Amino acid sequence: MIQQAEKLLQQYYGYPSFRPGQKEAISHVLDGENTLAVMPTGGGKSLCYQIPGLALEGTAIIISPLISLMKDQVDALNSYGIAATYINSSLSTEEQRQRMWDMQQGSYAFIYVAPERFDAPSFLSALKGMKLSLIAFDEAHCISQWGHDFRPSYRSIVSTLQKIPNLPVIMALTATATQEVIKDIKQLIHVTDQHVVNTGFARDNLSFRIIKGRDKREFVGEYLTQIPNESGIIYTATRKDADQLHYLLTKKGFAAGKYHAGMTENQRKQAQMDFVQDEITTMIATNAFGMGIDKSNVRYVIHYSMPMNIESYYQEAGRAGRDGEPGDCVLLFSSQDINLQRFLIDQSPVEEKKKEEYTKLQSMVNYCHTHTCLQQYILDYFNDPSSAKKCGKCSNCTHDGEEQDMTKEAQMVLSCVKRMGERFGAGLTAKVLKGSSDQKVKQFRFQNLSTYGIMPNYTEKELTRLIHFLTAEGYLSPGQGRYPALQLTQEAVEVIKGEQPVVMLVETTTAKQDLDYNEE
Ligand code: ADP
Image 1 (cartoon, rainbow, N blue to C red):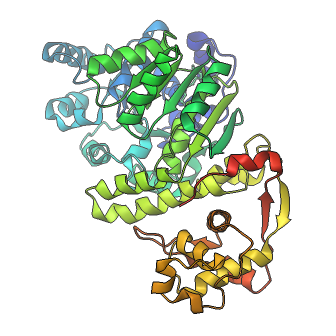
Image 2: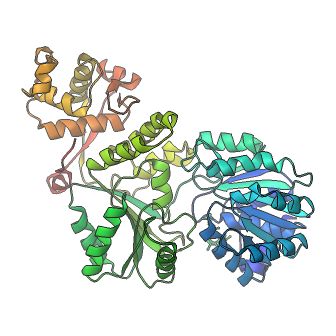
């Protein structure tokens, strides 16, 4: 049957061979096994359900959380001569009824629907009377409450589906799943270990960079001047930033558009179309933009502010280079970004989720401070075993600093944190190490500690940076709550005992100016 799949690949899509993971995923589905495919963005997940959908008898139901994605997918399938359609709220009632009718006649090989469709009893009863080839959950991480984009309506479909006597094979596909999410999806849709196809998350064509201490507007202006004709996305944390940056860049003559939830649906549609059709080269957007846009020649993704977690960052940055050509992923970091994200987490109505969100935010902050390979850091975060290899091209791998043994300095910092009772953040700890006569230092009588003023040759800024570095490398944990309360980890104990050296990349003079930024 897999030979038939290869034939379909050539016949419909004109591709000579499968990409990594596609063949395995397709053959599991063809064997009737529920399958989970975890592949990076641009890895070719659509084909993993489309080819079985073509090979198996009946209609394939594709559940996708985003309406904008459906039309593109359906248009693409139609252009290959495949009968496909979507049924969603963008259609008139009459159109929906007509498509439902055609669907029941078996006129389509593929039907795309949003999760909400399953709330309609008429849809469910229509499905019961049909021959179904498969059901696919696209963006399957939305099923899991551990996912960063959980949608309850998505999760509840799984139990609704149990009511269908003619339930076909089920497939789940995602590009961003931590081990927790993978486990959750597996349990939920009954996928056994051998039917999880995980090609890893590595995106060899992307290079990751972190820029600190630069004027962000100036950086973006210079960046776009160098490559005015390349397509790219600039993500901002707020609508206001998107508006301001858009105003500024268009005033400078750049072909930039914007996209955020404060615009009307028509404005957003138009902006997206302009971008996809290369009428504008730079899209300035909030995270409302992008899930499901299939634009393969995006050459750069700049994050104007740090996002809330690594999942969002990797998904957004991963929109660069879907065609396999190089993509540049730049994160412009400033310490105010952390405050903004904390504020956004505080706004969340779900109290229980906040703690988890803070932990995720800390991993994101650590990414900005780590000295290890950035691609490796991300892969580690997702427990991807392929993280053993350095990427060789991120801003840490290509850094021209020198390695310096900082074990003694680290021991001083760690002892100070211990003596301060593991209840305070980086700022105050730096003050104590420096020997500052700050009011707060006096208030807690920290001038009496033996670690008070033991690092007088460093500036407070440098000390804060060192503390952030030690946090990023896992020697300090920032605690779980709203306000950071540095605590020693097991690794820290080893450092204090002299069993573990600490090596830090220290700036050479040319690179130093990059780091002259304000820390909290
Ligand atoms: P994903 O959903 O995983 O992000 P897509 O399914 O949109 O990725 O595929 C990304 C691009 O790669 C699409 O343009 C698709 O046509 C192309 N593609 C998929 N599989 C293959 C293949 N086997 N050979 C060549 N190109 C492929």
